[in-house]
Image 1 (tube, protein in one colour):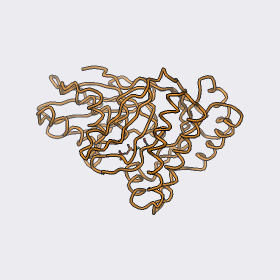
Image 2 (cartoon, rainbow, N blue to C red):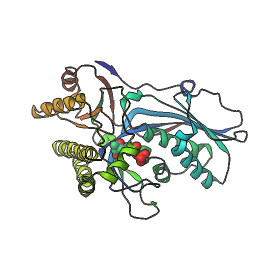
Image 3 (cartoon, rainbow, N blue to C red):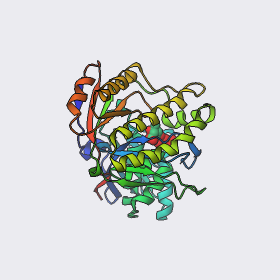
Image 4 (cartoon, protein in one colour):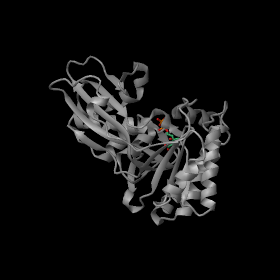
Length: 348
Ligand code: DP6
């Protein structure tokens, strides 16, 4: 078993090409987030409007470092991700964000986006959450728009739903909203991480590429799973119960609710046609270990996003016991972190 904490990156580690003189640019960091109450289903596909509200924690220091630069000499938008040029077909989400911010700023300048994540790709963290929120914040700053987090959240949502929750630290809720244009479907902080500073470990069990990216898996579930409707019926209620358990700091209640929400989401996906199965054998082994620990009184619970890896959240003080239990499972990499303060502008 190996262990890692996050590291800060220097600009030279994510900027493959040096910045143009006299460009309008900004460098930012934006965190990844882990949903305790999941977003899994869209009521409007192009706008990424969700079928239910969701609630996440922003990670302390795992996320994306990103530079966005606008310059009159650029002929088209480009994205360099983890020091490799992205194919134009991979850039749909980013271009959607840039187009929207250009419209607000009244400019047609093209952009060069350079970005890297400080977590291993195999961690299965929603890299679109940190990546898209980072591009949105950096582009807004580079264009001198200085938009508030709430407005950035709404814009980033159109690139990737979960990205709208990465503009805030602590416990963050993305409200479903009811307007057709989605202007009330955005995120806000519920309470800061200091309210209840749980520890977090990401147990990475496989470097295997996932079969379905979340966007595709979610749509297939919505279109073909007979369990999608029942999932949606309980998801909104569970999001509000999870919110109350966080506010009351009721650990055992939160543990039961978050695990149930995760399993219901995955059950709806598994019943899609063809099935969307993210779990590996190791996923279930870790789930069982965590249940055994909780049965022995250790305050820990799990959740799983669209991949095989398991995220465990625990009361501070339980880390050593959790680590000892997980070390019985072969081939795991453990990434330790906590609840963070949200994004930051590194340089304008
Ligand atoms: C399982 O935000 O990646 O992580 O809106 O299509 O870009 P798009 O999907 P995305 O989905 C995240 C799904 C999830 C649950 C969650 O984060 O709430």
